[in-house]
Image (cartoon, rainbow, N blue to C red):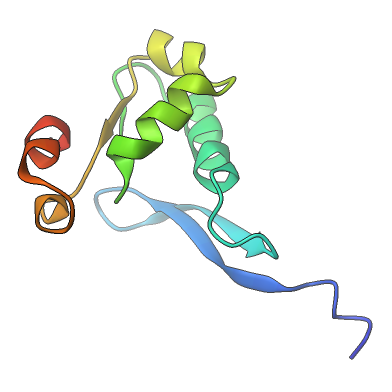
Length: 103
């Protein structure tokens, strides 16, 4: 029991394509939902894919600021990475945000 106590997984963070195939999966360990998980996903996706990519995230509007202020910001701007939100984002947040960030 003690041996496995260091592996406190609190969830999983995944990235999938629009066909619903899982591209990346990260175990969330002891830290709940922090920005390091989506930043790790973005970093990997930017290293694999080319310009004009898009990433939909349920809080893409707020996360875009985190991304821009991170060390990945210049690279995401060079690659013209676009953050997006889902169709129901406006119901949970606000309508103008949905209009600005929905593809």
